[in-house]
Length: 116
Image: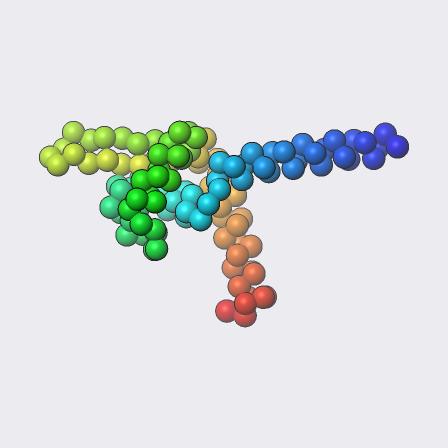
């Protein structure tokens, strides 16, 4: 009986942690933004070009939310005109391997289920 309780307790902790992650990464755009920033820091206009289908308003909202959750850092450069760059924080970089694993799974899914 005790082993079963330990399994349930571990399962509860995993589910809670997964819910926490989903709360931070919710929506359609956060994972693509993180994926783009895994390669290098980007300006706002670069992110708009690379993430197909996102509107400027939605990108701004998502960037603010991700900055609040300490996934990325916003740096204002003293250029003329002013340039703003975005890059992953140390906390955000920790998602890089998870994003790669999602991509591996997605590629396999396309091959097996969608037949692409």
